[in-house]
Length: 128
Image (cartoon, rainbow, N blue to C red; front, side, top):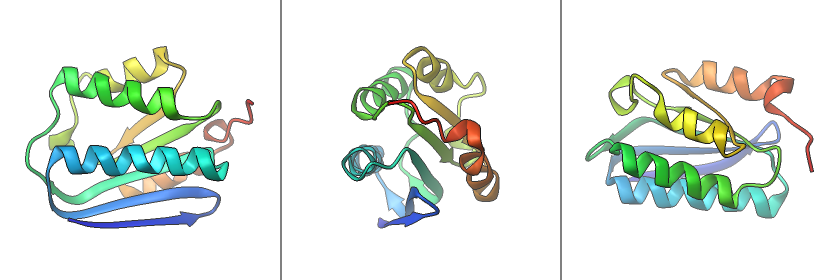
């Protein structure tokens, strides 16, 4: 697994490539949320389009992941997830959970769309 973390346009971008376990990707994403919190960043792009994850998360894992992100994230935090359709649930259950936990999150199957969404004012909430 290759992990690249960088700040681009006041957003943290986590890009995961290659073979990875779900646990490894989950840990990297959680670390990215913590990094955002510690650096005062309010936007995170998690890009797993080029990762080969051993198995997609089941519903309970999705809920757990989103809950840990929401608990660690600062107020007004936005997460864009760029992932292949095969990793996403058709019902987008994780987004439903995120919205109920106060986390602004969206999923995309393209990197450019995810970046555009994060750059919009609605994804740059200034709540404190």
